[in-house]
Amino acid sequence: MQAYELCTLWSGNHTEEEIDALSGEIVSLLGGLGITPKHLQSLGRRKLAYPILGNTHGSYRVWLFEAEPQSVEEINKKLRLNSNVVRHLIITLGPGTIEKRIERAKEEKYAKPRPTYGIDEPTHERTHATTSTRTVEDKAHIEEKKRAGSEEKKPSIEELDEKLDELLESDKI
Image (cartoon, rainbow, N blue to C red; front, side):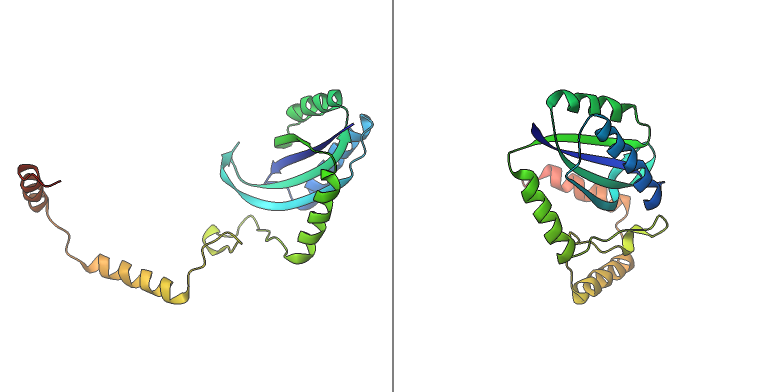
């Protein structure tokens, strides 16, 4: 028996309750192959790096289990045919890794909750652990520069042409 991790991405159009029901289908798929998942973790709803099938958000679920390699091929085939699963990934884990990952998941669960976002929530107001930590003074300075930049006189095309000719004629680069 080999240890595996299965990560699925579900469409952002589904509610958490619908995704829980759809996740039950994965558990029954695994059970049909004689596999009992050792751990299920919801990573929550996240904004995708790029749109996938028209979805800008998705919900992630991760299963840890042990199975025979031929069972994994069957799982892979069935997940490719499942229209509710936008993407999936099955990776092989080393020995003893499942227990370590379960412990780490428990520690993360109590350490700091992951933010979840609603469908209608604007992206610019989100805060996430990976966002930049700018101070209020930094933000005020940036806004002041934007206002000052909009008041500056922009050069005309003729002035730009003259400057370009001057640069091309000189040896400076």
